[in-house]
Length: 114
Image (tube, rainbow, N blue to C red):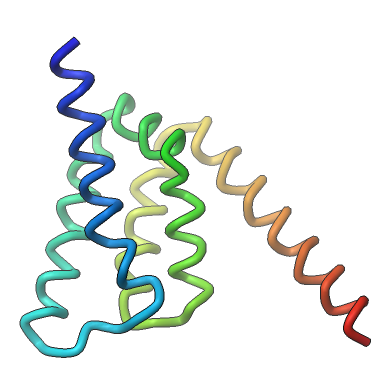
């Protein structure tokens, strides 16, 4: 049981550390390196199926998609995390469902604005 709690803590802590960078870019070279290291650590955590499942349940896919949409400098790390996640079939289906729903939302929003 302790292993499950530790794994969940690593996934959640990684996501919490990355979350502020969805809205703002890194401001210095040191901070850029820090964010790259955060994504590398997250990708290492996602190497096990249990952690991938925890990441999906914790809405990590949604966070990565939000980061990609913001077009900030950290989007390469988000893409790297999503690629790492695609090794698990359930995650793949979840990712496509999110992308599909985001596209439908964007299309509906555009139609209503016109």
